[in-house]
Image 1 (cartoon, rainbow, N blue to C red):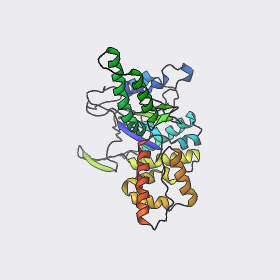
Image 2 (cartoon, rainbow, N blue to C red):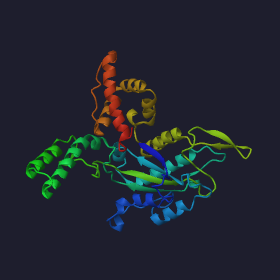
Image 3 (cartoon, one colour):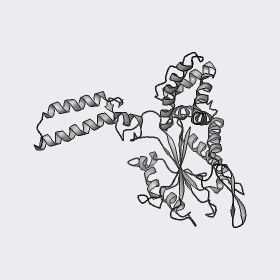
Length: 341
């Protein structure tokens, strides 16, 4: 499970309204019959109109300056293994999101407890992901793409008489470059905008910065640790426990759906990898045989190249070499939102 929290973009190219973001989340409904469309939902309703979402979020911004985010976006990305476990069932995902938002509310450190009923949010399930410029496949195909673009420009110049050359020869070179590109999908070179294969279901959540009364500010971007500040001469509690939220979100999924999480899927493994990669490696290699084997299978099924780590642990140099390979593997996993490490 990979969950991200992003604040509203407020530079000159973005609107102060939530309308653009809501329109973006409606993209999968384009050209779909009404009965096939996916709707926004909240804690108690399965069908909320986009117009209502914009009106409710934009109207809940009392005393916020133009430079302050009016809403936050949570993106909930179950791994393909997690999605298979729940049968890619949208009803189960909605159930999970509603329990997850209870964890979100509980992660705020305030003078009075924050409940999910205090949170103004709307969520939307999406089933597709498109390849984007930061994806590994796009980056590694880019040198081939650049050559193809140049040759296509040459073809245009040849047709207009600006350049001398054999169009057929150039077309053959273009086709060869497409065939030689390292990443292909259904026989075609992977390019930006192509749909990714496999289960890509994920959930976007738009959360108001203010609570439902439009008086209390609830920012998940504030200090991760509980703290107090002096406001008008009195101590005030503040903070949002992101670590606690991510850990609880994982446990909520496991408890709700009886999911047996492998070490490499866990948030604690992700933290360990970031803080002490050698400790992560040692822990991985010390797992029971069955669990270690499952860990490698999980990474392998995600589409990553998994290095051969069946080496004697007392051979330090070999272990370090293999670990460098593993580190590259984990870095790939972190960047791929459909992989929950």
